[in-house]
View 1: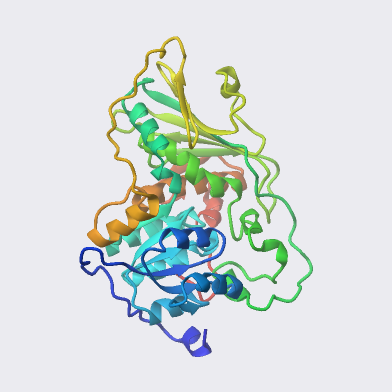
View 2: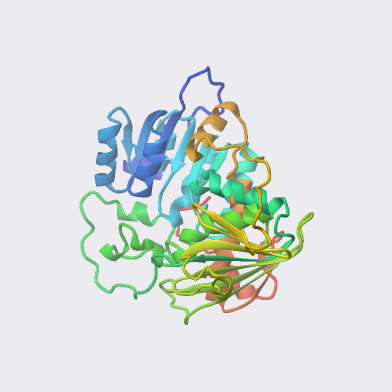
Length: 417
């Protein structure tokens, strides 16, 4: 990135929302092309990959081997200024999701952004509203949403097979992102890494290898721990099946709060109001070593990850690949309802085709934004030490004004949405 480009006010020149001839490909830019970004790049590789952007030159060169015709950038702002694009894929660390996504939306582009949609609750709401204002086709990277198993579970719950659901438990006992104190040493920044660009809107701090390539998830300034990493995948099923939107209260339990890093285990309790035919319900999240006691009581102690719906007439437990309905004696002859949710053509492909047709996507930013806001509120409740009374319309915890600094943290100078 040149100093002139970095300092200049930029007005994107990207073409957007054009009409596509049959078989015509999108002109795509990809922001973040290592790790998860490499997977996303592979998933959209059938389109025209016009530009690749990453603050790590090593990741950039690896991606360029697969797309030798793409232009290479360190700064997404330069890419959006100089390239004519239809859409972008954002796969950066959480703390730069919003700034990259907002820049693309302001440029009139469609956006696929990895989960969680943003790093803070307020960012998430702003991105959702901006996407709506721009008429963008959007999709958040909750790839499991395209899984047939999730779709069948949604149909069963919505068909009232287990009766009205007033309680759901979501648990993840995989690797946790947690622990550590801020490093006191500051080794040289590796050649090829643009550290200041990697920091983006986050508070300034010296480079240290403990943050990269993946451990940024356990630092509050950059990620949100296991909750932010995994809840958008697993709570997605509860949100979809129960047609959830915004909680009215959020409380969290965990070890003493560390100002720098995320906890090794967390339990979060969400209360949601009635919605249409759905009664008010509680959704409980567990990560680390915590699991809901009711799973053992119902015979599912060996499940490491899952979503358990408790209905008035029975229960249903599911993970990515399977579901079980019970109790066995009551549901011995159970037959699932007719399929009403079509099989997916693929999570990325859904978005690509919608970009061309201006059609809908299932994980658009309106749906996934509400999911992300709720997920991130769990960390706000934990860090504030309060059971939050949540006013979703005003985006405030009415009983915890001090929590606003966590709901809408400030950006470093030079960065904005």
